Image 1 (tube, rainbow, N blue to C red):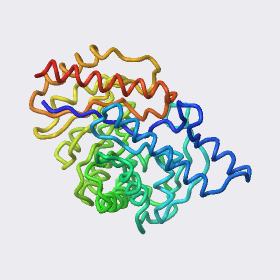
Image 2 (image 1 turned 90 degrees about the vertical axis):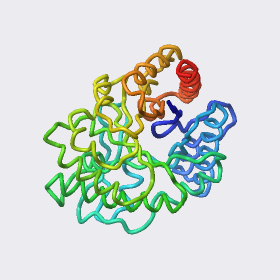
Image 3 (image 1 turned 30 degrees about the vertical axis):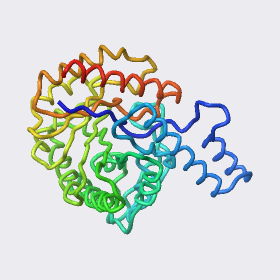
Image 4 (image 1 turned 120 degrees about the vertical axis):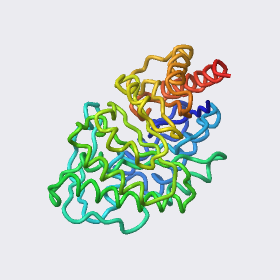
Length: 327
């Protein structure tokens, strides 16, 4: 059994040490005319460096940059596509966070790299390869207001094609793993399978990277048959908030990887490494032929920064126990 530790999305932007750069403060000062865009860019870089150094110090196997410069998981990328207009704030699913809703007002087209330069710069700050991050095409369609297509299959496919080209740009920038965030797949019904498949099929055809399809806040069970045979590398499961994810494990094709979301990203309670290791052992018992990633259930940005750091420490300790028990 191979098991790697990794994040499952963005990371808190606030510091835990007094005197460290506080990106929120710098942005507020810029908005008040007391700082510049250059100051914000420097703060984003410092925050990214801090996030990467933290992961390397704790021992995360597959680190991420943390998306310090992103307001939310949708807007940063969607605003770079032709055919998209960014509108007002909406609540992000059932969380206490908000995002600016993309509106589809014309054909969705990729016109050039959006995230590649940021990823390339972040990679210079890390001694280990970083896992890149993109919104998933089906979820980006569901988070958007469709004023152009009217057909979810067509609209989701268009996002898949555009995001596939962005993923190819990330591959050119050095990315070997790309994490796509697909919370809406966890809310999909069997009838949505055609649109989900259309989105992911188009995305996966557009690049050569290993792909983690991460499904926080729900289980992909209802539409898993529709995507089972596509050429994704890994499926990420929220096994805390959506225990039905355990029923997906027996269905995963041989040779794939399963992301075990066992560190709760929506609760400040700290997990006992022994309990997490036992859950990993359960997964291994169900599928000894698979490799696993051990991760939080979702982006840790929902938690206070000091709690997120402790969660990562528990994550690494849990993986060590799981590997010892499985040796």
